[in-house]
Length: 79
Image (cartoon, rainbow, N blue to C red; front, top):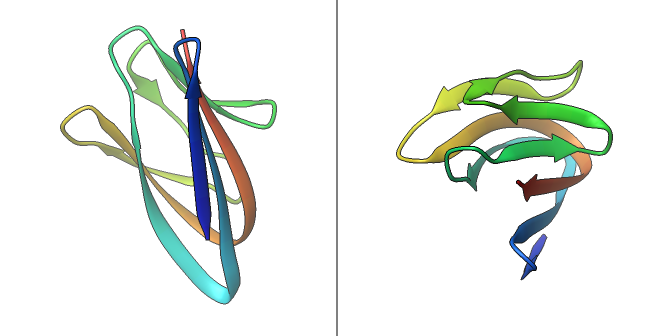
C-alpha cells in the first residue's frame, strides 16, 4: 500500500510493506534536495545512506533507491 502527496515543494511518500516481505523503493528527488524517513537523513547533498532497517542501494536517473523490510515508512523529500 502506498500514498503520496506534494505540497509547497515537499514530496511525502507513505508506504506499508506486508509482513514477511521486502520492497525496493524508488524516490524521486532533484539536486539540492534531501530525503528523510522519520528523523533519519537518508540523502543529502547527493550522498545517500541508510539506517538499521533501510538499505541505500544507489541513485539512478534522479531517483534514490532503497531496500526496506516489512513495516510502515514515511519518506519526505524537501529542500
